[in-house]
Image 1 (cartoon, rainbow, N blue to C red):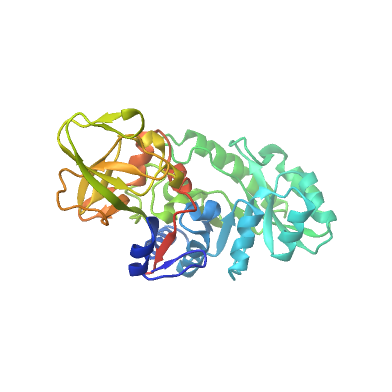
Image 2: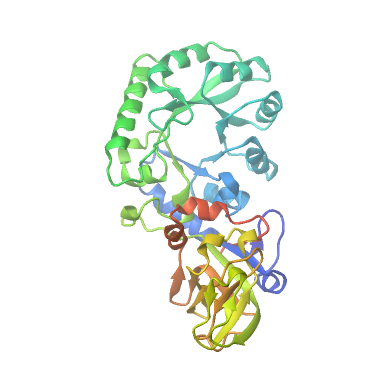
Length: 385
């Protein structure tokens, strides 16, 4: 077991030196990539999405694991994220989801062989006029997301204009699905039809780029005809389902656990107010444990009084307002728990489990936000076992 981002230590050393941490099971990521690959045709490539520090799991460790498990591409959101992977010695092709905005970014892209997204002729011209050698680009098409990309009706014209520019080559054509995780497939089918029509037109005219991709995690699991040449796997590689109705498609293993130490235990009488604002008041003689983690670590204050922690294989209710660095749990029903014990906020302890989806449901959000909110000050402890 080791800490990602260049710091390494044994599991025993981690338990001695850290108040709170994220554990990342790389074998679970390897399992998930292999399971998803079995859903694909042999000719369909897999792109591992490792933006936002690998959805909070550690971008470098996830990228290395995904590539060893069968991914052939990586994707990031920013030039800095791509540069981090290159500095770690990763040589696989890397797609930048965002367009390039300035000369300095273009210089890094060219030097480190990143492949930027282009949405307009002006963006393509900036890359061309930099004169830094042949830069592969991916043309993004808006088929209904309304975020980035050239309108699908105008994509053929733009592609033709870009093809005559020096110093750039269109390596890929892609779009993004807005509702692939929904039970109702109507919008996804509409976007797919638009994209497929464009791809067919380009093929017949000899303009089809070498790599065409559309499917995100949800579409990869639910719509096999969206796979094209490559699928882009984000949430699913981390062992989480984009939607509950997709659980039966493939068996995924969550790769992340969140843990923190109990640093103080005391017993208080009934009627005692707990934490800021006294949003919880004890109804019995209560053993309270202070846990060394809080909203400064990415644990939303809005979860106060709404979640359970796991201690010695049993559930312990979080009580009172979550503070920046600490929070409290009721361990009255876990009498053998004491300071120094480890509380599990996310993950398994014995037969019990608290999932990222549990937190997302309570907050009315999505698992992506829970994962990416986990603070960089939490060490990422990676395990190969």
